[in-house]
Image (cartoon, rainbow over all chains, first blue to last red; front, side):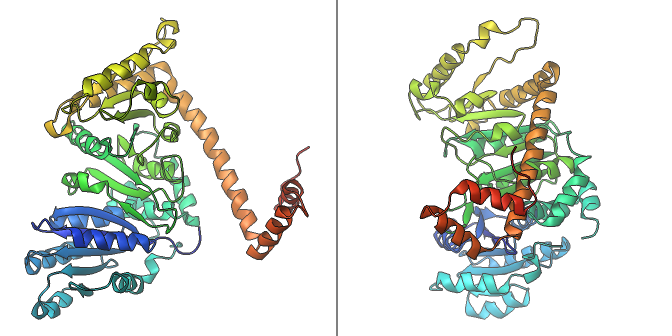
Length: 140
Length: 323
């Protein structure tokens, strides 16, 4: 194998809204950019997301949320990651995230926030540039 | 990272998850770790689940795991989806149906991309099985990519092969074709609540009745009569029967000596594959892309022939010529 491997990304929809077209578009775009995308579908609890991220050993978690429950669900995800001692996974979010919430979301450790109209290229670049470099090394 | 092997053996699932990543990416250290893990593996029953895309493999696996959990097993699942031949990317979607299992510490699910391997598995699936096995998961269920007729690699890795077949996917001529239908130890006709399920069962039963071994087998020896079972996962029907059949098949393999026989055959092919892999890597290390291009050009223009080129490269990596 070369010194790089495919980037692994978990795409998840936390909470109860059932609209996952955006998440599917992102998943497909990341696939087309050569990434391995673990797509978990809708109605995920924070526990499910964190457990899947650990078992799949992903480099990044992208959460899409349209319901407005982000300020309840995102802190839970970040808390659980911390509890599990996971500090090397990039977390980003997309969907309907009001501007006034974004500072607080970033404060939680969620590195990127992407609203409607974001180009898929921007998200691909963001993932490539922000995942932790040493996770991609093939030597421990 | 120093004692990733110890952490894995003590049940740390993050260590196991990272180990799978190292194995999957053929990190040099992984071979050393696997050598250590080998001693602890060999206890798990390895079950392959295969069938056409959309036949209901993930759904069936989810329900099998649920039933196995009721019986207090610690279950590993490796779910393989195809890698795009164009971009190298993949959508691994088997977890969608398995999410209800997430959060159970005695279930470990890992999605793998096939990464160009064509037999229905990823190239490193067997080594990932070894890691899960050493970590104490038993059984380990391998869900192949959606298969057509020729992806039979799972039979070389799994001890019990479950072939899923959904109603309405082909007539009885499909059933007598060689390939995937020949490797089944158990048939599950999925979506049995849909019309046509009984016909599919009848067609498969017809296929099985043509097996000459049914009559010719040595009556004093254990004989495995391949069952055709109907399942309707959403109604939770037929699942316990499939889990029972998996267990019975394992008992049969042990009693008949087939388990040991298959294990021996697998070890042989595994050592051969490792050597082959080393040869390919040695070759890569001692050649440049430019040189390859030149050789390929020379062969395609008929300046040179592939045989003498191969002999020359073989010598370079210290492989002696065939006598």
